[in-house]
Image (cartoon, rainbow over all chains, first blue to last red):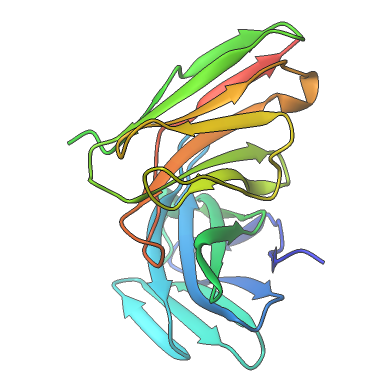
Length: 112
Length: 112
């Protein structure tokens, strides 16, 4: 079983719509959760992190964490073509904060 | 403000050749990491260094060695390259264990 699972997509949404990206993790001891965006041929860059159950908002982005269901999501409101990229979910376990476990990423296409 | 710098950006090796990938960060971060990224596989941790003087294996350490030369520099060595090591390699660093990772621009390695 993979530590972090993501649907590879592609997920296609029209410009202005809400894009919903999902991630599940296997270890209930995981405590830190990160969303990275990666443009083709580029390195990952952090969008948001979340540690506590519930929602965390930053501009057009909202991260949602449900530890009981072992589920993390990222909502992108008013999606723009520039949001088209691969989104990587990453998890850190409570017993070793120095190991990130990454999902394989979800490719998002925002159509003008 | 360089952040994390990797060299080289591209490399082609013949099977059996050796090489060292270099990584340096100027953010005074304690922890450094080496990942490989293959299509559909996401980022997989090869080795990490929680602090200067320490290194530990990640998910896929076979065929690699690392050196944490000082706080700034963390190198990855392939002693005898194999085609299965064809990948994009990313170096990353974090201030401490439970914070976001900053990535270098990546090294695209092809082993023929």
